[in-house]
Every structure is written in C-alpha cells, then in structure tokens.
Length: 67
Image 1 (cartoon, one colour):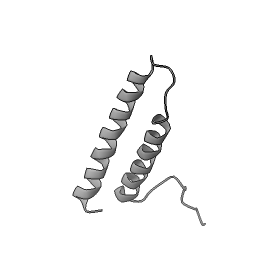
Image 2 (cartoon, one colour):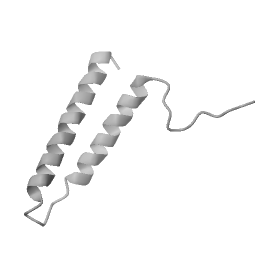
Image 3 (tube, one colour):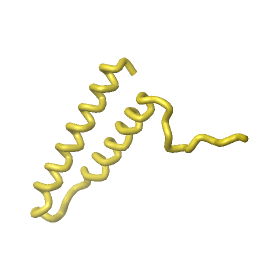
C-alpha cells in the first residue's frame, strides 16, 4: 500500500535547518515594519535582536555541517 510522505516532514537535518532559516527570515520581515507606537519600539527591537541571533546561529550550523 502506498503511503505518501507528509509534506511537512523532512528526511534529514539539512532540510529542517534551511526551513528554519526561511522561517526566521520571514519573522524578521514581519517584525521589521515601522512601528508607530513609541512604547512598543523597544520590544520590537528586542524581538528583532532575538530573531537575528537565532538566524545567525542557524546559518552557522548549516555552515559547520557543510550543508
């Protein structure tokens, strides 16, 4: 019996790491819009910093693994 593989399942770490980069880049884009409320700008800056740190770490993992 044929059982198709789920679309969201990756057979290897390489695919998952590259998907993580794409997701983090999208999160950065979503957060980077101009914020009108000055009370929220600090939170926005902190969130962007966390996403950028995660993005850097993921790219380093890809580089270190030779992907």
